[in-house]
Length: 109
Image 1: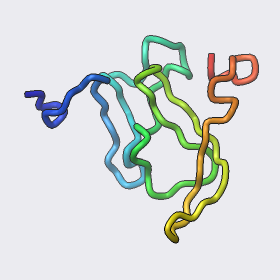
Image 2: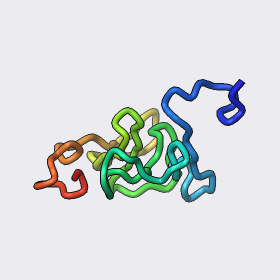
Image 3: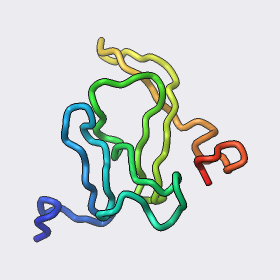
Image 4: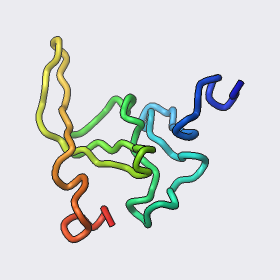
């Protein structure tokens, strides 16, 4: 039994997440490192959330998620305000800049 992940499979690595209220769910390390060896900085820095859990207070800027499948952080841009079942929120989406080359988006080097 794997005691580091509550007995669950660790097929995509070990995540270390923040648990304080202002940073809840933010990934600080993946496989015990704060950057990947697949990309140079800033593209290779580990950060953002796993996509399921975010700090409660958000602004309309962007949301970052970390994808272990491509070994990098992805920034999702604010798209619009939404209300679902009477609960207001923000919708974020993957814009053209998410996978743009470095000439138009230097952080994607």
